[in-house]
Structures are given as C-alpha cells and as structure tokens.
Image 1 (cartoon, helix red, strand yellow):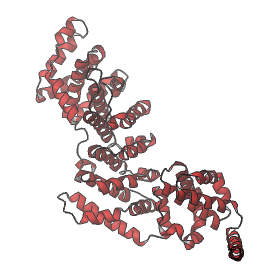
Image 2 (spheres, helix red, strand yellow):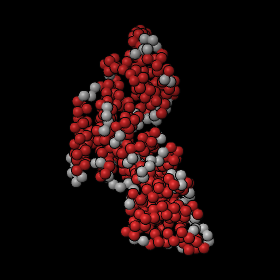
Image 3 (cartoon, rainbow, N blue to C red):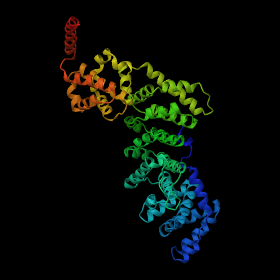
Image 4 (cartoon, rainbow, N blue to C red):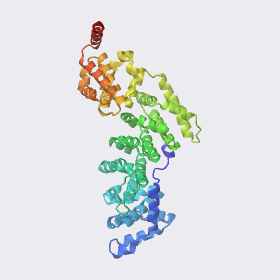
Length: 484
C-alpha cells in the first residue's frame, strides 16, 4: 500500500458532514450586513455571485478573480462575529478547497501581497468556543499546509501541532466533550469522539508531507499517538493513529528515531484484538514500512526482534490461514513472515534479552534464570553507554507491573553478581536506591527479588557469601537436631 492508494484523510466525519449540510442550507442575508455597513459593496456583490454559482462557474470566477475571492472570504471572517455566518463562510471555503486542491494558492497569493501567511487568518479561530467552527478552521489549515506551495514553519507549525496534541490528549477521548458556544450544551460521547476523529484526519493530511513528519516527531507527537492507542479508543481512531505511524515510517531517518518509542508493542496488542480488516491492514502496512524503509540493518533487526518478542509471528501465521480480498494484506503477511522467519534463525539469547527489555514487557523467560547467559553476557549490558542498564533502572522507576519490577530487580542483581565493577554504574544510574525502595513493595515476589538484588549489590563476593551461608546451615543442623 502506498500513500497515493490510501483513503483520503480529508473526508469529514459524520457529525461534521451533517452540520456542514445544515449550515449550507441556511443562506445568509448579506444585504443586511451591507446595510449595517459591516461589509463593503464589493464583498457583498462577490459573495452573492459566488455562492449561487455552479461548479464550472465557480472555476471561471476563481481563475479570473482569485484575489478578490480570497480577499472577500477573509474580509467577511474579519468583520462578522455571528457564529452561524462564520460557520457558513468556513464551510464555503472548505468546499471550495476540497473541490480542487490547487485553489489553496489563491490564499497564498493574497497572503503574499498582504505580507501574511495563508494560515495566519485561521489559526486564531482554534481558540473559539463553537466546536464546528474550530474544527472547520482546523481542516482548512491542514489543507492549506498540505496542499499549498509554501510549508508551514516555526511558531505557526508549533502552535498547530500543539493544538492537535491537546485535542487528541483531551477529555474528548473519554466522551466528556466541552460545551459549545452556540447553546448546544454538553455534546454526547459519540459526537465527542467524531470531533477527535476530525482532528486525527487533520494530522493524517499533514503527515503526507515529509517535512511535517519530522516536525511532528520533534514535537513529541509519537508519544501522543502511542498514548491514544493505549487508551482503548474506538477502531476508527485506532486506524487513524496507526495510519499516522505508517506515514512516519516512510522516512528512513524517522524509522531510526521511532526506535525510541514502544510503537511495535502498541500495534501488536491491537493486532491481536482487532476484528476490523482496515485496522489489520494498516498495522501490517506499518510493520512492513518499519522493516522495509529502515536504512540500517541494525534498525531492521531491532524492529524484527521486537515483533518476534511481541508474538507477531504467531499472529501472522493465524492471519495467513484467512482469506482476504485485499491483495495488500496478503502481500504484507507474506513479506513479514519471510523477514521475521529470517530473523528467528539469527536470534541469539542476547538479542532475545535485549528485545524483551526494550519492549518494556519483562517476563520470566529462560534467559533471566540462565547462569550461562549471565556469565557470558553481563558485561554486554555496558554497551552503547549502558543503554540496557538505563532501561532496567527506568522500568524499576515507572512500571506498575509487579512482574516487570521483580524481573528488573533480579536482572540488576545478576548483572552485579557476574560483573562486580557494575555496582558503581548501578549506583550512578540510581538503580541501587530504586531496588531498595522496592524492598517494601506490596507484592511478595517483588520484595523477594529486591532483597536478593540489594544483597548482591552490598556484598563483595556473592559466591563466598553463598558458601558461608551453606556452611553455617550445615553447622546449625546437628545442633537443632540435638535440641529436638
């Protein structure tokens, strides 16, 4: 699947489409605005002519009077405050752009002559109270930015991306949408989720442009996406967010950066539970991009190992048994099975451990209890500026899963037991204090492994201590027997 074949992200949600149809049906009395001297004769005559023109007539008008069109639209927005009329103007602008993407340039031409940017007229509208007005303005901004000849940059782009992040992270996801400014009261959870889908659609449109992908990652947008995906959102929003991951993974450089985020575990969880073919399709396409577009072999291998660790291989084998009309799904399953199958052949115990650790999903897999593994690999935890040790200590700090904490504490103990010089490293990383904190954890297994780890951190010779304890036990045994 390529970008050209993807569904148009600019398609409005049901609530936006229904409201837009209602707005179009309520024609504005422009003459009353003229009589009140709120608009000029020139703007009044133009808008009355434009709104009744058919598609072909509008194209002629825009070809001959593009400057006047942009000027009139923006003048009306600037001088009229009535919400219904503002909604009408925005809907008319959105319809005009949607009909022909090249029409965005009339706003760029006008902005250039007035020494502004095309989106500077619409960004302030994101602060209005009416949800329909806000989201129509957001759609227009996305279209101008994605289809226009100039890129949105600097503070304007930061402002817009921060607005998108705040909307995706807002209470709207929980179905408690804000009140509108038009007396509609609190909106329903269904309406709320559709407005969030509209925001996601704006992001989908923006991320089709390579420069915006880099800006989104720089703005910590990937964490926003993974947070939405972990929030058990509806399948449509799932699809849209994964669509954004798929778009980001078209850039080899961003594939490198995406390694810092738990994208693969998030997507594999959804794949396991997905009942919607469109969601399955976009996850497989995203996985394929991560493996295919990554320029570095190490990056490709890391993604493959993460997928294996998250049991994607088993899911692919199950999917292979099903029949799909969509050739993209069939081809992606075949591609992923081949790539992951090759990676399994090359998988070492340290690769397996590293992949599990980076996924953040520690479990009592055999490597953790393997004396041979720790004897051969403890020192390797120092590689890449202690990358894996930093992950271990981070898990001790942020994880709320008792199993993850217990395994992490155990591993730190095994690391210092087989590499005593690592005690200072663990202390510098704050790991010693974190392990000690968990000695009072409510979970018995966490307390036990934290206690063992602390003992290993404290003693100078773990094997010597072990022999001493064993000898002491043997000496005490006869005495106990004699007393009994």
